[in-house]
Image 1 (spheres, one colour):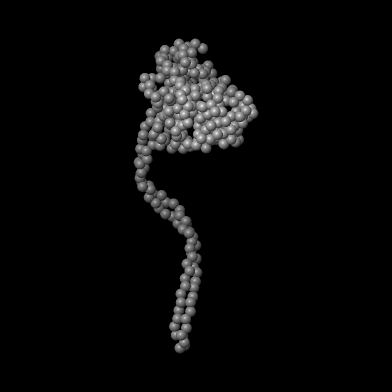
Image 2 (image 1 turned 90 degrees about the vertical axis):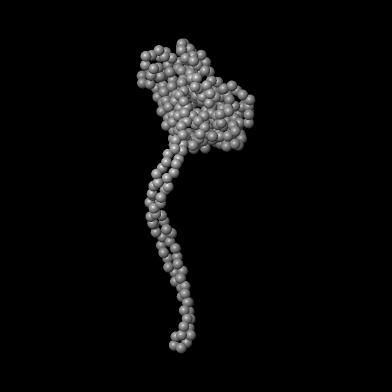
Length: 342
């Protein structure tokens, strides 16, 4: 489909650089979130989303910094993973992707002192008493000893405690995405040209917005329904290893395929692959800064029975995992069959 979009577009591809030993540190743990992030995204009412299958990227002047470029590159990969084709030329795109943000506000909350009454078990105890006596009885001197045991049973008691006031600070990263139909750029109502929009907010102790925003953007991208062809592919029986992954950066210098979830009892699960593992090589082929299409080709096996050797980094350790590919019927898999935490 040929489009003529009057927008400025930046092609954000990561150039493949020299291969290094892997990420310097891992900072992608789900436990970094104080509470579950709020992720909201939806198509505009009445939009036929099946007619869209390609996109390009619009970058504002304010997004010329390395952090924004990196995040836009990651979003590009996220959308490609749900079936949308990236178009280098604006006129070849069905959609224009616009990122809003990210921001990273720090807020503090001071709690008031409070009292709490809670039950407390007082254990029982035993008292052993003993004593002695002596004296004259009937003109004769006599003496003796005596002892006794007293058992006090345990019992429940209540105690009142005062919880002092305290100040707690957290970072609140936010980011938004919009998909614009370039055919509607001349509309009198600017909102009519937005066919999909979403925003994400998190709460974390992590001050690095690059690391937190990429996780929000990945979750937000999953709210964009896959293209019909990709949806059919996701439901099909095909050779696989049981790994759900995305191209992420643990420190901002480079990206690697990072395991998001592992299918229970899959070849990857049996081989010991875990969520948050960073895949630094496949069969000896480095994965540092791979473009999304190249990562797909490397990580998607061709046939059942073949073996893949994954080199992974986990908390600073380099591990080798040998995975035997098998046919997986993805159409019968339910969400609870995925393992999302190590």
